[in-house]
Length: 251
Image (cartoon, rainbow, N blue to C red; front, side):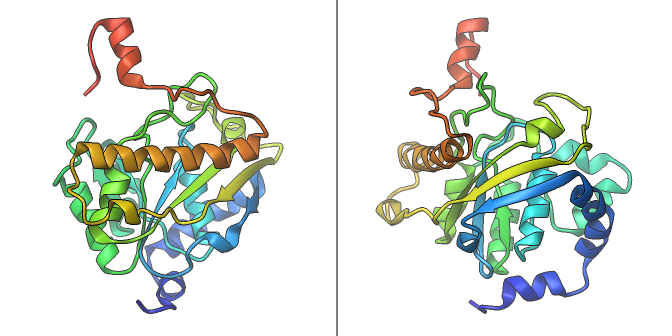
């Protein structure tokens, strides 16, 4: 791949310049990023960025972080956001990918759209948890398989990322922002995961779940370092908790 591709994409005129003009001044005033191991973030070529997810403000923060590190971020985002006037237009023009809630991952249009980004050497941000974590302590919960499917099918790296501090800006499930005083967001970039053991295997549920477990473990270790705490031994499984509380499994 072209080694300067990631950098030239950011430096070329695009709708990202408009987004940066609108978002960066506010975020720069409200947020101080403290990034550990920033050199591990790929500056060129296609890859999947896999962060933890515990606040509605996470995509904005991870988008700004990616831009500051030299890449134009594309996300899988809730389809409902694309119906918002102006915002929806900006999202479509910047290549963000709408995802219908509850939609199937295998062979879905979102995955196909992400694969097109990969073919162009661009990055895609996929939250492996699929939604805000339900873990009471804001630790990563059980992951879904979309991120590893893209990485394995396209033969590209998946880079785990953990961040902490977004809850001080917007608590989980809250719509209220607290921009001032300025907050610090801690970020740690992980090594691209070695998925070689899965390549060439049938991408069935067992393989994808095994690879996803590795991704979630890597994200959790990074978050443990940031929080200087130990995560619970058992990962929160929303399907099991839904069954216990309502007598049904979540699809």
